[in-house]
Image (tube, rainbow, N blue to C red):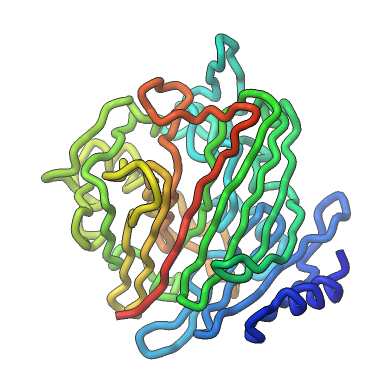
Amino acid sequence: MNPRISVAIALTLCTTGAFSMIISDYGTMPDGRVVHSYTFSNVSGLQVTLLNYGATLASVKTRDRRGVHEEITLGYDQFSGWLNDPSHFGVTVGRFANRIAHGKFTLDGKEYVLATNNSPGGIPCHIHGGIVGFDKVLWSGRVIESPKGPGVEFTYVSADGEEGYPGKLTAKVTYWLSDGDELGIEFRAVTDRTTIINLTNHTYWNLEGNPLHPISGHLLRINSDTILPVNKGLIPTGERMSVVNTPFDFTELREIGKRIGDEHEQLKQANGYDHCWVLRDISGVKHAAQLFDPKSGRVADLFTDQPSVQFYSGNFLRGASKGRGGIQYRFRTGLCLEPENFPDAPNHPDFPSARLEPGEVYRRSIVWRFSTR
């Protein structure tokens, strides 16, 4: 698509007179296909940049309590960074987000074998859709203006057998931005064969706006009373663990770094937080979490219809990824809050089902609401 034509289309979609979008050539895939970036803002100046590579949330710039706008996500200046990214910065992960034990699951009596592209604790597993998951492919992009706000709809068709998953899956990810400082992410998918699916967004947040500083000073609240404890391979054991009197109690706003170093078996296995919090209400859209940075005053409230949130405290950031401005993203300089189905759900009959049948429509949503205090 010609970027100039895209901009013209975006302007004709504007009904308020305030919406404009800049669509640019951002880089080139190894096979020569052009990658596009989509940048747009709302009336308060909250700015979002998306990439059709990986249906990626590449940038969010929002104001602090003084009105200064800064970047609050981890990412790269150039496409080469995203192309070689080992950390899944901002991407859509799928066909199944998070881990699947031993890279195997069974559907209707048939075992499917996936790539084992992760091995925490020396125990191989499948993670985030495989070697070439949804984060590593080029999606088609279409500028839209929904009732909730303007944005972009990305579409990708995953072939039957891709990365070992059954069924031809057509997936759509729609981002929209409201003038109320809400950023929405909506997932839709259909399949022609029974398959499994679990889509989410994998943005790393640092609300201070300074990725040289760790996120340990951020305050977090998760509307959850239980987590899924994991084994040494970071796979859920199938049990539920109460957060009461543990370092996992974020039922009230608590400083992330306060107890992250406690001598707790679950923390030691994951080298910090990398666990699934089961939300109190697993049906409908609900307030799932709140993240607050006292230094900047920025607040991010998370709403979702997913049954859980994976909180990952950036334990595997080691400075290998040179991000914007050449900054090396070091240990715990960003965190992820990933609304999703339970990890390894296909191998636990009592977990919420990850099955998608022909004729069904997979629908999930995430909304981030930004403010200051």
